Image (cartoon, rainbow over all chains, first blue to last red):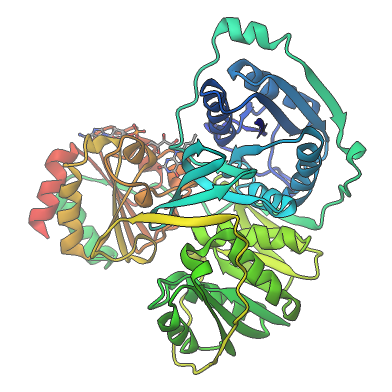
Length: 249
Length: 308
Ligand SMILES: Cc1cc2nc3c(=O)[nH]c(=O)nc-3n(C[C@H](O)[C@H](O)[C@H](O)COP(=O)(O)OP(=O)(O)OC[C@H]3O[C@@H](n4cnc5c(N)ncnc54)[C@H](O)[C@@H]3O)c2cc1C
């Protein structure tokens, strides 16, 4: 089975992002970029499936700017066999990303797509579900356990009430949650090896998908910031404030 | 305009998230229908009929909707979609799972986790872990939207909508519900509690969370956790508050042994009053706390419980 792993280049999760002066977007000048943490988990799961003899080949794909090659190299160093950058300088909305990915899935005869449950920049949590809809495949979101036996996928999902178990038919699209695995660090020899692995770049415009966005961003604002309050000296003082000043208990 | 709201329910009754989504829908305007999909869900349908502002409750009661499987439920919603200008659901794990699938099936975009309605086609939502708020406009004919519960008030419940059955079953056979492990608790739900007390890595283990449970019992609070506490196995995943967990905005949020990473703040910084108990005076949580207590939690929490 061939696995496609989707990898997104996003801002580093430890960086606090600010709105730009024009209120049109966020300011990404000189901001450190990284592989979306959830995509890293998806990548790790693919490698484990290959180590277990279930996956035959892992293709890491990113849809994004030329610099996303950095994140694809990271994926290659973790264990992907080859990389594909579907290049677009414009940031594309989830539906468009899903349509482009569906084209790749068909071209490459993919049996399982693994991706993150959300990207930490736009916080949409849509791409996997949309891809699954377009392909007409089964859908396993927010996965915390993936187990493939005899061409069925037993999946555990993190849901609001706890955990849910599903049995999914293959092929399938699975979006990965935080506790699915702990991604490995790429070793130095693997980072070196990754430099020689094939990485193909294709313009997004070549796939015959309409890339225009149906979503217009009218404005981007900063949220109300909270002021830091006061340090109280004791539990008694704290309770007094909560009762008399705030009336919350 | 007419709006279809996919309800969040437990078969016998509605979840509060449904009521806040109805409020968001009523801000858009137009007729509001509620769809109850499930297995043996007549009780939830009756509850939905009482929500003020709802015209019609549509019930799809069939075994194939057990566990609200995304494939079957999305197919059901799509089959009803031609009558509606907006399709909405709470931004719960169900809503997030199902609605993007509906949107792509209809070849339209989706709007996740909105926190404000500007007009029938324009919404506000947070990006970058709540560090920015985007105002976004849809050019699609059908708008597909999930709604953040904490951003809207509860709809009232003195209505009397009609109830009608949707009989056609959409069993796609792509997935099967194989069970669930639901955390049993008599406490108020995390996302609707007036007071939340959360523990982090500083709690050290699962047993120590009983200290927070005791305080919660006295305050009628819910207990939450940071990702670190969940990852370490102290508490189950459904207690995680944050960017990638649950979003809460109670009147009082008490963070115990939590450092205050951006991802955690994203899930609780709209709380009315925030209290932090942490032994590190430089912990970032103090920057958003109304009241901070710099103390060892193993001293402070038992004292707090005693004093209540
Ligand atoms: C993609 C991604 C998604 C994430 N999503 C979330 C999310 O949804 N929710 C979330 O919470 N995090 C999330 N995180 C993790 C987040 O970045 C932090 O790592 C996490 O919130 C830290 O948890 P913590 O504050 O409990 O632990 P720590 O940061 O380790 O803080 C523990 C705190 O406890 C204090 N402490 C220790 N012992 C005591 C004591 N005896 N008395 C008093 N204080 C004590 C320490 O001073 C410290 O401040 C996410 C991270 C990533 C990368």
